[in-house]
Each structure stands twice: as structure tokens, then as C-alpha cells.
Length: 481
Image 1 (spheres, rainbow, N blue to C red):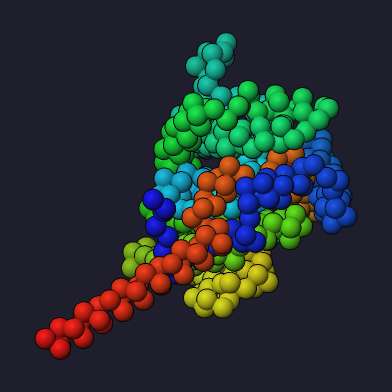
Image 2 (cartoon, one colour; image 1 turned 180 degrees about the horizontal axis):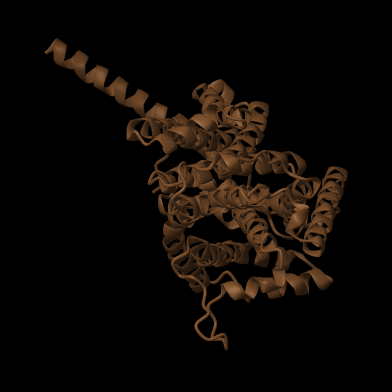
């Protein structure tokens, strides 16, 4: 019996693909020479990575004094970048775990790249707190290992210490999930490769043969990892929000931060996935597998999470007024009308106003609108983290200590360079591993391929038409009698 397919659902695989064509199309980027566009993008990314390495060495050699931090504003672009990168890494786990558990088939076209994005984003995020220490070789002291320092242990009551465990756990589970999904596809590439590439993919495939037992264990492991990852989607950015919410600083000490941060993380993560996937589908010629239906589904999630973030912004303003607490009111008044007013209104424009364009089907299915909006949203989410950190610290209880923060070239170089690190890793990934999950695409071909969806739709309409004719004939016969 064939699977039931909705007559109004758009296909997720175009081009009347066969199983062999799917393998050929998705494996081609790993087997052929890189295109001119890929080489140009890789050289630009390497330039950013070189900038990053130079700025890291400069910071370690000269100390944190090379940044523009001061006694009032002790956190600047560094922690802003840390929270921003952690947020971007959330979409991969959401697409992989939660959408897998809910059996959402549209995840299959984007889950592989989203999982890779998670890994590389967390790598970028984890470096900023270490660099912020100034003496990076002292980073080992954040781990609670047996030592000879007597009673000197990390402060287990500090949310900064919780970050270490949350992010390391998140990275480990995400890496396992990503690699588990890659194993069948590595075996596919192995069977097509020769020479040193065959030896490399033989090791990566871990002895995969495609036996029924392998598939059973693979699916079971995927579900177990999805179950473990699902709480992480909610917990990791919740713990990051505790860096601020557990303090006593007006503007930070609020219980809305955990859900607000989680929604914002999914919001920015999906925007970055769209940025990457729209580039990849064009450069690697994967338009038949990353379709407009995928883009529209992701834009709907962006619309939902953007609206949640907007409600959180308005809730913050209302609670600060309703509390009657003058310091809390001043903190939010200063955000809107203070010296950093431009960042607040940039945040509102990018994160609240612009996503509302996606109520229009015409706009949320437009590739160029989606691409520019995805970049726009991530600019807005960076502004959000900057607003939370810099504007709150710049005006504290003592007017005599009020200050203004602007970054130095080193801080700007670290941020731009981290983008270079991220895109260098991602572009190398597109040359080594299939960007789209071959096994999962093949699994939905018979239900979501355009030739099958069209056939089911026509057959479904024909069935209804025949039923209508029979019903009308029975009615006419009954009327005659």
C-alpha cells in the first residue's frame, strides 16, 4: 500500500530524480575540482581567518588593554560575540533533534548543513571567553580537576562556570549527532572513491555495509541522540542567559531572559542556516534538493520566533514601568533614549519589524528577499546582545563612573576574523562531506519527490471525481424511483 500524501503539499525533491541521480548530484561536489566561486569564497574566508589569528596573538601578547574595556564596562564585543555565536548554533540541534522527533520531512534538505553550522558556531563561541581571560594558558583552572591548591576550586555557584559544562555538553552531543548522520553517506562516497580518498572514507565510514542491522542501530542511535539533544536546545541558552539574569544589575535581573534567549537563539540560528543554504544551493547546484518549500518552512519558523522575541522586548518595557523600581525604569529608558539609542532601534527594526514581511507568501518564497532578510536578522540579533551588555553597563548606580564604550580595531578584527574561521570550516566541510543527507533524501523520495507527489495528487483528484460521478448517478436513480 502506498503512503498517503496530502494533495496540497508541495514536493521537497524536484527534477524527477531517481536514486542514482540523487547519489550523483549530492556526491559531485566532493569528487570534482572546486569551482571558481568556491575558491574565491575560500580565499576571502582565509583572509578573515588570518585576521582572527593575528588579533588573537596581538591580544595575548599585549593583554586585554588592547581592547577598549574599562572599569565600568568590563564586557564588550567579546561577550557579545560569544552569546551571538552560541545562539547561531541552536538551529542545527533544533532541526536535527526536535524536527526529527516530530517527523518533519522538510528537515532532510537542510539538516546536514545546519548540524555542521552548529559545530563550527560553537567552536567560534567557545574561544571568546578564553581570550577574554587575557592569560589563555590559565583556562585550565575553570575545570574542577583534583589539584594541590588546597581549597581553591571553581565557584560552582557561578553561571559562568555553568557555561563551561553546558557548552561542552552541547558541543559533544551535537558532534555525535552530526557524525552519526554522516556515516551512511561516508560509506556511499567510499564505494565510489579510489586511492587515498577511498582509504580516508573507509576510516570515516566505520565499517558501514548497509546491512539491515546497521540501519536499525543507526535509526535507534539517532532517536536516542535526538532525545538527549532536545533538552539541550532549551537548556544551553537558558544557562547562557543566567550569566545576566542571576546578577543584581537593573536590566539584567529578570526572569524573562531564559525563554527570551532561547527564542532569540532559534531565530538567529535559522537566519544563518538560510544564509548558508541559499549560497550552497546555488554554488553546488542543489536547487532540486533545497527547494522553495524548504525556504518557506524556515521562514515560517523565523516569523514565529521573531514575533516571540518582539513580545519579549515589549514585556521587558512593560515590566520595567509596572515594577515602579526607578533603577530598572532608568535602565530601559537609557536603552531607548540614551547614548546607545541607535543600537536599540536597529535591534527593533531588524528583529521585530522586518520579519513581519514574511506574513506575505510572495515575500517568504522569494529567494533574494529571504537572503537579505537572513543577514538583516543576524545583524539585529548581534545588536540585541550588544544592547543587553553595553547599554546596561554604561550607566550604573554611580553617575561618576558612567562611561561610553566603543571597540578598538583589535575587537573588530576578532569579530570579523571569527566569521572567517566559521566560513573556512564550512567551506572545507562542503568539499569533504555531502552537504545534503543522501540517505534521508532517498528515504522520502517516494512520498515527496515531484513525480510521485504529482501522481498522487492526480490520482487523488481522479478518485474524488469518480466518487462524485457515482454519487450523482445514485442520486438520479433514486429520484426516478
